[in-house]
Length: 222
Image 1 (cartoon, one colour):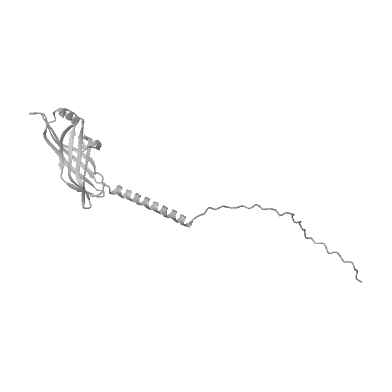
Image 2: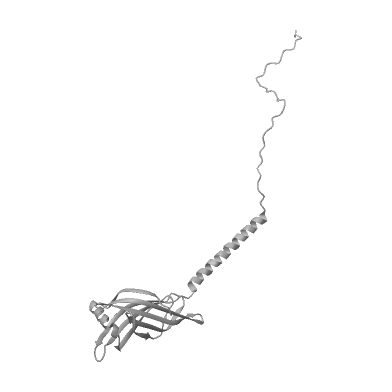
C-alpha cells in the first residue's frame, strides 16, 4: 500500500549565484571624430592641382627662357705665331712684324650667329702694334668656328720697346696682348638681334715651337 508521505526532490548539481541587490554600472567610452565635408575635400584637391599646374608652368617657362635667351659668343686665342720679325736700325729704329692669329668662336645659342667682322688688336708692353680685321662669316647654332688672321706691320716704330722685344726674343718667350672683338647678329626667326663680344688676353708665345705657353683672358669693355 502506498505511503501518504511526499518524497523530497533529488538534489541537483547546478550552482546558483545570488542576484545583486543593485545592478553594477559599466564604464562607457566615446570617440569623437572630426567632421569631414566632401565638398571641402574636393575644393582642397582642386587648389592643390591648380598650384602644382602653376608651379610646373613657371618651371617650364624658366627652363625655356634659360635655353632661348641669347648669350654672347665665346672667344679664345687658340694660336699665335710669329711669321716674321725684322728690326731696322737705319734710318731709324723700326720693326717688320707678321703675326698669325687663330681665334676660336663658339656660339652657345640655339640661333645661328652671323658675324660681320672680327677685329684682333695686338700689343706689346702696353703699346699697340696694330690690328687686323677678318671677313664676315657664320657660326651655326651650338657650333664652333676657327678664324685665322695675319697681322702685318712694315716699318712699325716701337722705339721704346725695341730692346725689350729683342731681349724677349732671345729668351724664347714674347708676351703679347691680344684683344679680339666680334660684331654680328643672331638670326631669331625673322628678326636679327645685334650682338658683340670683346676679350682681352695676355698671351705668352714660345718663339721656338710657335705655341702659346700660357694665356690669361678676361672680358673687355666695349
